[in-house]
Length: 521
Image (cartoon, rainbow, N blue to C red):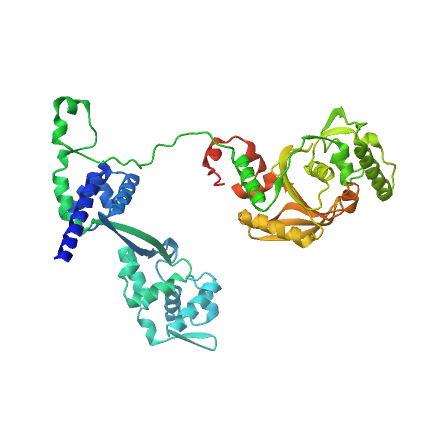
C-alpha cells in the first residue's frame, strides 16, 4: 500500500510538472508543436521550417527550449553525398584510364610508345602508367616484351565502373545506400584524383516524445483559453476569469545594453597586478618625469650612449638640482660618477645628468625604491607609462606601458629569475616559453624571454631580464643580488587579445571594445 502511494504521488508530480511546462510555452514553441503534433512522426528540419513558417534561427531557438523542457526528441543523421567529379564527366566522358587502355590495345596498339602517343592519353605518361597499374590490379592485362596483352577478364566491368554507371544515371547516391561492392569501389575511387565528389551531409529530424503526445494534444486543442498578457480590456470586461495565463520566464535573456566598462587594456593591467600580488610581489609607483641621472646614469648607461639622443628621448626644459640637505644624495652622485669614470674611462659631467626627461622606462623608479629602502630581501613590481621619441608602427608606440619587477635576496640566482618568469607566464595561460642569452647595459648575465605565438606560429621576444650589475647596485648600497625583469606591456596584451597591430589597442574601435569579455579577476 505504501509503495502504491509513492508511485501515485510521483505520477501526480510528473503530470503537474508537465502541465507547468506546457503553460510556459512561447508562441514559437507552440507553432513547432502544432506541426509536430499533426505529423505524429519524424520530420526533417527543412520541412519543419516550411510547415511552421518560422525562420531557421527561430526554429532552432524554439527547438532548444522544447528539448530543455523534455517535450521533443532529436535525431541526428550523418551521411555522405557521392557524385561524379565535373572533370570526370567533361574531360574523361566517365571513362576510367584503365578502360581507355583496354580499348586502345583492343584496337591493335599494343606497344607502350604507341599507347602513350594515342589520342585518348595525349602523351600523358603519368595517366598511362596509372592505367597500367589499375589494369594489373583488375587482372585485365599482361605485359610481355614491352607489349600489352588483354586478358579475358577485361571484358567484364570492374566494381569501380559499375559504381560510375550508377552515378552517371542517378546524379548522386548516399553512402548509406551503397552495397558491399560499391563501398569498396567508392573507397578506391575516393583515393584517385578528380573521379568522385564526396559531400558530407548532416540531417536533423524532430518529433514529439511519445509519452507527452496525449497531454500536448489536449493542451493545443484548448490553447485558445490561454493568454500571455493581461490587458486593460480584460480587466474591465472581467474576461480575464475565462483565461489561463501562461507563465513568464523571469530568467529569459534581456536585450543587449551598451553599458560602460573598463578599457580591455586597463582590465588586463588589473589582472596582471592580481597575478603578481598573488606571487608575493608588492606594487610601487613613481613619477613620469625623471632626471637623466636616474633614467640613465644610475643604470650605468654612459653619457655618450645613443639612447640619450633627442631622437630617442623626450627632454624637458626643467633641470634637476641636488638638495643641500640631502648629504646621502650627494654621496650617491659621487659614487655613480666614480663608477662611470673608472669603468667607461671618461670624465663624467653632472650637467648631462641634470636634464629632466619623460621616463623611457620604469627602472628609475625601481632604483629609487632600492636606494631609499636598502632592503636585503624584497619583491616589488611596477606597471606604468613610459615614453619613446620614435615613429609609431604596428609594433612600436610613442607612449606605452611597461611592466617590471625585482627580487632581491642573499641567495638569489638566475635560476630563481627563470622560475619567477615561468610561473608568471603560466598564470597568464602561456605554456611554451624559452629563454635566450642577450645583452643589456645594466644587467649581467642577461636573458631574453621568448614565447610561442600560436596565431603567428612562431616564437616572439617578450621580456628582458637579468641580474643587476654591481656597477648599478653597489653605489645604491645594495649588497645582495637583484633579479630584474621587464618589458612592454602592450606586447603582452597583443598576445592576450590576438592582435597583429599594437595600435589597435588605442583606436577606440567600439565593435572590438564591446567584444572583449570582462576579466574575471
